[in-house]
Structures are given as structure tokens and as C-alpha cells.
Amino acid sequence: MLRVLDGERLSTPPIWLMRQAGRYLPEYRAARAKAGSFLDLCFAPELATEVTLQPIRRFGFDAAILFSDILVIPRALGRDVRFVEGEGPRLDPIDPAGIADVAARSRESGLVVQELAAVIETVRRVRAELKRETALIGFCGAPWTVATYMVAGQGTSDQAPARLKALSDPEGFAVLIEAVVVASIDYLVAQLEAGADAVQIFDSWSGVLGPEAFRRWSQEPAARITAGVRARVTGARIIGFPKGADRGIAAYAAATEVNAVGLDWSVGLGTIRRETEDRIVLQGNLDPMALVAGGAALDAGVETILSDMEGGRHIFNLGHGIVPQTPIAHVEQLIRRVRG
Image (cartoon, rainbow, N blue to C red; front, side, top):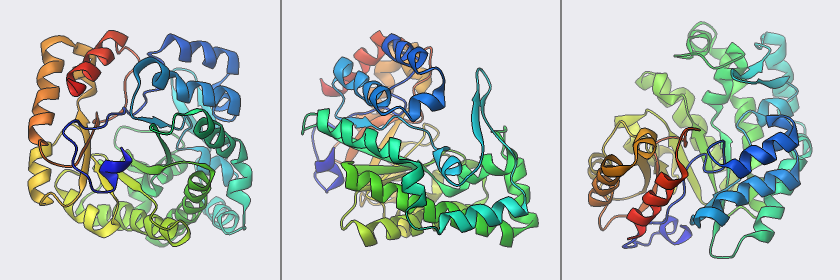
């Protein structure tokens, strides 16, 4: 994978899958039960290392991705973060005083890394146990996506509370975004220094933004993170994943200077390849439902992607994360098809 990120074109693309460690694996469910809760699992280095390595042992992916969550950043900035079984994350919606507090905390030297020391220890342990030929990917949530949860207190269908906050109080919202930018730079640098080979910025909710809002709240913060990380880690390899950005990908890639851009399944890789004139690595973008369906539908989806990216720089992945009902046999089918 690192060879592709560094510019090589390989006849067989490297492969890893978002949420490759998760509930579709019985060994993950056992580790989760042992941890007690999702957040406890994220902050238990021994167990988090185990679940990060589980899909590598079972499937032999070309990269492991750190097991953690995008909302560890708000937690490190002093916000209460909890996960409700069957419902997802819950936070106390942030008010102006809360924004001022997280902004101040983000500027405290070493605070974020100290608060997330357990996660950084997981990075060290995973890198120590991985074979050298398997890459380790760290990550953070993009500032826009993280802020949407901080404003609403949970995920919503269209993240309207954050969109409203950005429109009605752009100055206050900009302070919140910048606090997450600063914290994310510290966090990603710590992951890279602990042994991560590359990092990914997950912007799971960028698709709800209009063009100008996307530029201001998704693209520009990602560009500041990339520049800030590389100012401290020369040549850091960074993947951007602005889900739903569609035709804004070329501008995003140019503005952020990421090494690769992840795409969701709503856009053809061939189309984006032409728009970017083959200047950037593309990652993706199989529909996770094709992986659930298996059989001919899965084979056809894989073949379309491989055909679109033939001769290009490509990392095979899904267009979003593996869903819990995915059969293990279908993941095995996917790997055979890509590598065969």
C-alpha cells in the first residue's frame, strides 16, 4: 500500500476495508464482550491491539487500521462521550461556553496526546506485532464530521443542527472547527511517531454540505491538518475521505495535497480518474451492500472497479465501512477476486 501511496502503479491493487475489524467477526464480538463497552475497548491497548490484528490474521489484508473511534477527540477535549447500545454515540450538545473551553484545551501543549495515551499505546503495540510488509493506518475524524456530533449530540439524518450552527454563527462555529483541527494535528502526529505508516481523515458527513460550505468546513480544515502534520512529520502519507463529495474531489485533492482520496460508491472511479487526470491515488469504492450480497453482484462490482482503475494508482476498498451482517465468506470472495 505504501508503494502505491508513494507513486507506484501496481497490476494488483493493495486492499484493506474500512471497519474491517468489527461486528461481522465472531472474534471481535468476543473481545468486545470482554471489554464491557465500545469506549472501554477503544481505550484498552491489549484488546484494541487484538481486534486491530484480527482481520489481518484471518484475511491477510495489505493494511491494518487502528481500532478506535473518531469521537475520541471530543473526549480528549473534555466533552462527555458515551455510546448507547443500539443507538450510537451521545454527547451533550455544545454551547458557546463549551466551545470556548474546547478551544482553550486544544491549545494546551501535550494535553490531547496525554488524554489519548492509551490509543497511542495501541499504535505502538500493533506496529510491533505486524509484519513489516503490512501497513498500519492511523486516523482521525475530519473537523466538520466531529463538529456535527458535538453540536447535535448525536448523528442525525442530514446533520441539520451543525449546518444551522455554521450558518447562524459562523464565527463561533469556526472556533470549534479550529479547535478540532489543532487537536487532530497533535493526535495524528503522535500516531505517526508511534509507528503508523499512513493516516486517514474520515469526513463521513461532508456530503450534506453545499459547494461553498464544503470548501470552508471540510476542504480547508483538511488542508490545515495535512499541512500541520507534514510540518512536523516530513513526508507524512495522508488519505482524505470526504464521503459524498462527488464532483468536488479534484478540488479537494488539489487543495489538501493528500496522497490519496477515498471515494464512496455513489460515483464512478473512472469518472474521477479522468477529472483528476490520473494525478492522485484513488481509494475505494465498492458498495458495502455488494459485499453483503456476494455472488455475481459482488464479482461484477469488483470487476467494474478493477477495469476503471487498470493501469492507475489504486487502493481497493469499500465506499464506506463493512456492515455487521456481512458474511465472512463474501470477504474471502472479494479478496480472491481482487488478487486473482
